Image (cartoon, rainbow, N blue to C red):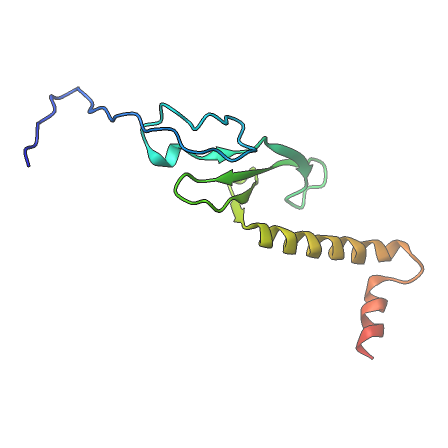
Length: 128
């Protein structure tokens, strides 16, 4: 094998990769032609954003971003949840549905405070 030295100041160029098969929800949908690195050929959906209080300060909400993603080397899509703190959760569809179930339950518990009996009393009732 022969190695050709690169002149100082000259970058080696990589050949463009062939397009990949995009997910039906990919915002590009074109297979990402022109990419020179396989990891750049990933699909992502539109970004859904919402304000949420991620810290104790109740005055201002931070933007949380959620989107679907599928990497070129893995046919299994996943959901990405990004916080302004640069925390990125990557969840499988099963994990998303589990999280939805738990969030709905926690929201229901929190709402019990507004009703006749508090959530703590309901929890104590089930222990007896």
